[in-house]
Amino acid sequence: MINSSPIKSHRVGYAYSANYTKLNDLLPSNIGRASLIDDLIRAYNLLPNCDIIAPSFASKLQLCSYHDQDFIAFLLGEEIAIGDNEEDDKEDDKEDDLERRLEQRYGVEFDCPVFSGLDKYIQALAGTTIACARYVSQRQESLEKQKIAINWHGGRHHAGKDQASGFCYVNDIVLGILELRKTFDKVMYIDLDLHHGDGVEKAFAHSKKVLTASIHRYDRGFFPGTGNTKFNGKGKGIGYSINLGLRPGLSDASHHRILNEVMRPAYVAFKPDAVVLQCGADGLARDPAKEWNLSVKELAKSIVEIINWGTQPVILLGGGGYNHTDSARLWTNVLGRLTLSNEEIEKWDLIPETANCIDEYAEDGYAFYVDGEVRSVSDRNLHDGYLDRVIEFAKNQLDLIDAAEL
Image (tube, rainbow, N blue to C red; front, side, top):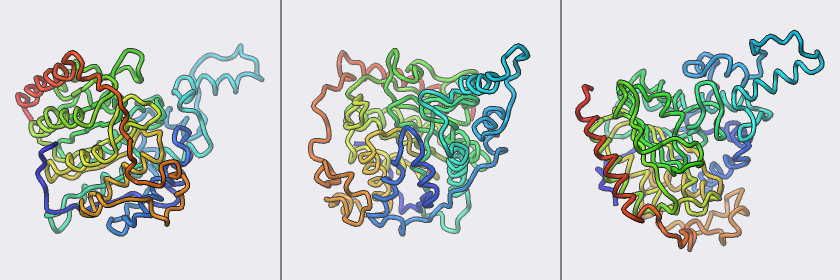
């Protein structure tokens, strides 16, 4: 298990409004997931233990603090010109052709289709993660409580500066980190999603003020195709990108080992002033991807233990997770462990009858902790010493952090 340094208590802010939940329910890759998450949190009566962070809409200026202006204009439904010479196009086809080419240019097709409400969705998503950054940046009278802000509907780590990708239209994480940097000198970003946090890494690859660390599945042809363990940053940022590219079947034990032997030492070496943690749920054993074999309870414990490595403010974000009920279980469990005693959490049994979405849990007998959740598959990271090699390579990179002038 991870050796944590417990703190006295947490002060938790949770980003929530009924309208914000409805907007996130529209996301084509996760239709209705937001309602499941917020409903389960409400059913366990966890919101009264939190400060409610009011979701807000990011302005175009805020969105363009990182993203390309024309890209944002397109997502917001504004008219833009593609810049090509089109005088020979047929008038009837010109408008449709322009729209198609813009969709191709900006990646708004296939896994990132245009949908009704897209403009409001991206503004609310980005604005709310920025609001979380402002929440943890505010001074408080008592320094005895570690400030934590949660936006489970955020964590869209694939979006690029001028292109949507992998169900991610704008990169709320990058925008949140930029907001944190107005107050905090150094920010550590940890990505637990099944997929590599490519968009965040690319945004800060040249920086030694933002350390990006990603644990992810890596293989030829596996999306997004980045995150080779050997990549460790560019220019002044060499040493400040850490990648753990892994094989199928990753177990709780192997995951814990990576956190203990790589992620925590990186945290100690870097000494961040704030932490952003992307808690993707698609590495859970029952996710449709069926790539990793993590359990809800152990992943939730790991997330809380990462928070307890220090007393720095932390932003928790969601991400991937396509078994919606297990995603809701994971993120509700994390919030419970931050606001209730572990004894209470361990006693959770059946989904509360007050849950509006209780029928979604019928196939599991309405259980919160599901028997047989972890699959009987081999952790291929343990074959031929692969995990040992990946960990050793990543640990050697930590010397670059220690040697850097911070």
